[in-house]
Every structure is written in structure tokens, then in C-alpha cells.
Image: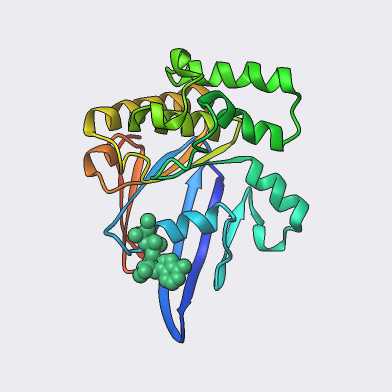
Amino acid sequence: MTAVVEAVNLRKVYMLGKVPVEALRGVNLKVEEGEFLSVLGPSGSGKSTLLNLIGALDRPTSGKVLIDGADISTFNEDRLTDLRRKIGFVFQFFNLIPRFTALENVELPMAIAGLGKEERRKRAVKLLETVGLADRINHKPAELSGGEQQRVAIARALANDPRFLLMDEPTGNIDSKNASEIIELVERLNEEKGVTIIMVTHDQRLAKETHRTVHMLDGLIVDERVNKP
Ligand SMILES: Nc1ncnc2c1ncn2[C@@H]1O[C@H](COP(=O)(O)OP(=O)(O)O)[C@@H](O)[C@H]1O
Ligand SMILES: [Mg+2]
């Protein structure tokens, strides 16, 4: 099998004033097409940094990220924009636009991608149905529970039919019952649509539901476990 995402000796040093912070100290990782991978590790171990580098939101200090075998540091702006469109991001704090309805939040990435009004409305409704929110499409974020807001965020992440879903502690701010429902939803997307998923989590129980778990500590992957073949 070929890796769709590969990190090669990835290093990231942040400068805090004059003090260098080594967030990643040489991370190697291969993710297969259609895999559901979880990343566990304590706060500050470099999980978000790794996700941001893989998602081309930031650049490594050294080392490289390969997508389909191509080094993304060689991509020009057009190609990077194209790549980011293939990646759906889901964050811990949902990051929805407060004055937009659920429907408008899901439509936004499609509008940016240039999809026509009718087409994107139709697609947004369908995506909200997929995440079980057919009866909440005209609600604003403040009128939704945490779990519901995260489901809107997942629908939004799926708007442009991404190949990859990168999730940074998607259940970090919702209760455990809703967290289980979110994971079931994501599992279904992985199985039915073949979306490759990398999910950062604190929750060992949820990590066990994914195909494979890597453990990070102090900027390195220190352990790896296959949960399901
Ligand atoms: N923008 C930044 N500037 C300086 N240091 C940062 C920045 N982002 C993260 N760090 C530091 O890098 C390390 C890894 O952070 P992060 O990737 O956010 O870890 P995690 O997501 O596992 O909690 C931490 O020590 C953190 O304080
Ligand atoms: Mg983090």
C-alpha cells in the first residue's frame, strides 16, 4: 500500500522571543489511503503542530510533508490552495461563524470555492442531513449544543468533498455521550466515503475506535499501536 500522507524527519522550532521551542524533533509518519489514525499524547507534545504541518497551515523548520508522494514545500500558491481544498479541518472550539446559520456556515467553503448558489444550498442541506441535523439548519451556533455545533463543523469540513479530514481534539469540548456519537459519525464517513482521517485526541477510549494510534511525547512519536486491522 502507498502512503497518501507522509511526514519525513519533521522538525518545528517556534521562537518565543529569543527562546527556541522545539515542538517537533524529527517525526516520521506514514498514513495509508482510507486509514483512520488517532494521535494521542499529553498537552504540549506537538500534536497540533504536526496536524498543522500536514494540513499545510504552517511550514516545518526542516524535514518534509509528502502528499501522494509530492513534497508540499515545492508547491506554489495555486497548488497549495488546491491542496487545502482537499483537506477538511475540524477544531476543538468548532470555529463556526456566530452570525451565520448552520446552513450558511456549511455553505461558506463552497462559496469560496466558487460553487453556484443553488448547488451549494442543496449540498449543504444534504451534508447537514448526513450529520443528523436536518431539523437544525436555520439555527445559529449559539442556538445549538456543543455536540451539534461540532456536527455542523464536520459538515462544513466535508463541504468540498475532501480526501482528508484532520481533526484536532474534536471531542475536547463536548460530553462523553456526544463524543461517542461524533466518533460514530466520523467512522461512518471513513467507511462509506473512504475519507482518510487523522484525529488528535486526549481520550484513550475514543482512540481505540480508530484503526491505529500513535503516541506523541516531547515532539516525537514514541509508540504506535494497531487497534483494528
Ligand atoms: N505559535 C507558537 N509559538 C511558540 N510556541 C508554540 C507555538 N505553538 C505551539 N508552541 C509550543 O510548542 C509545543 C507543542 O505545542 P502543540 O503542538 O500545540 O502541542 P499539543 O497540541 O500536543 O498540545 C508546546 O511546548 C507549545 O507551547
Ligand atoms: Mg493541541
